[in-house]
Length: 184
Image (cartoon, rainbow, N blue to C red; front, side, top):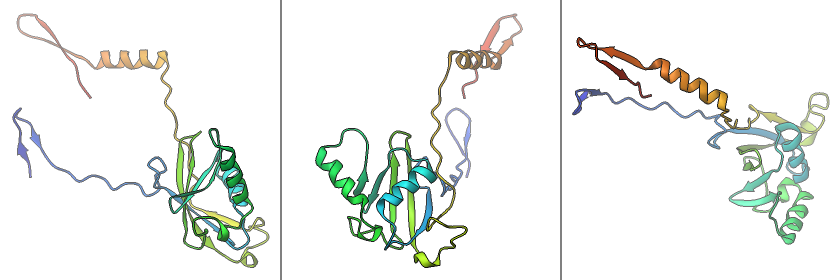
């Protein structure tokens, strides 16, 4: 339905596009990690995050509980608690353990990176020793760090010049010049 508005323009409603289910920028992107939850330790998970997914300082949450955190600002007792969790198997991790179907939240504040990992359990004897020698499998696209926009003076000058070139000049019958600036 098109409706006129006060300025003589017409508004036409249109549906929004569906969000991208693989979007890591809004934290809704996820990958799948297949492991043996009975043998895979939390320290193994941290290694996978660092070596395979590019996470620098991981924060791991399960059921709204932090089960591993590193970085600046932690108290000594917190550091000890999180270090002790590293030795536990995923199944024995705090907050009820990480089992088949668990969804863990991963954040790296140093890179502004946030995503989810869906855990699938597979017995370690079922992994192919040739293609999966470390007894884990990652499925899905690895998360990408959000690019920070750095605007240099050169870029600002180019954009200003482009805006000036986009301006229109109108000359009326009396040779009076008017400038129309397009607002995006």
